[in-house]
Image (tube, rainbow, N blue to C red; front, side, top):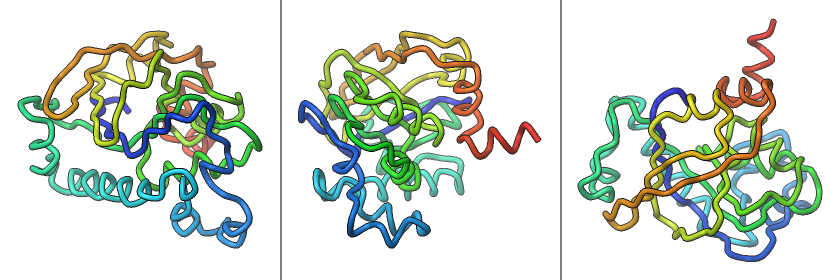
Length: 212
C-alpha cells in the first residue's frame, strides 16, 4: 500500500443495509470453506451476480501490471487523460451504504480480497466485526458521506501508506468517472497501531509473521 493506489468499483450497493449473508451466502457455500477461490465464486451472488466477473477482470489487469510494470492500455483508455503515477497499485472495491450486518463470518471480507479487493467504501459499517475483518485482510475500511458512485468508476489515492500511518480521518482522492476527474474526500475512522501495521503488512497473517 506504500505506492499510489488506483481502484475500480466492482459493485455499488445502494440498499440501506447489506447483510453478511448477502456479501457471502451461507448454506450452499459451507463445503467450500477450505477452498478460498471456490468460495469467492459466491461473493455477492444474491445481491450483485456480476460482481465476481468484474472483480476477476480487474484482478487480471493488476496481474498484468505486476508482470509488465505498466497498467494495461484498456485501463488507461478508460481513465481518459488522467495518468496514474508510475508503480500505481490497482485493485477493486465494493461500495455499500451500510455493509456487514449480521454474523461475523470473515469470509465476507476474505472473498473480496481473494478476488483482488483493496477497499470497501461505506457511509457506515454495520458492525465493528465486519470492519475488523476488512482490516485483517489488508483492505481499507473507507467512508464517504454519500455514495455518488457507479460500477466502473475509478478512485485514485496518491499515497495510501502515509494516510494509514498518520491515522488520517480525511483522505483526499480523485474520482475518475467516464474520463472526468473530480477531487473528492474520503474518510476513515481511527485505527489502532496494530490495525495500521496490519493494513500496511497486507493482512493479519503477514503482520503476525513479521512479529516472529
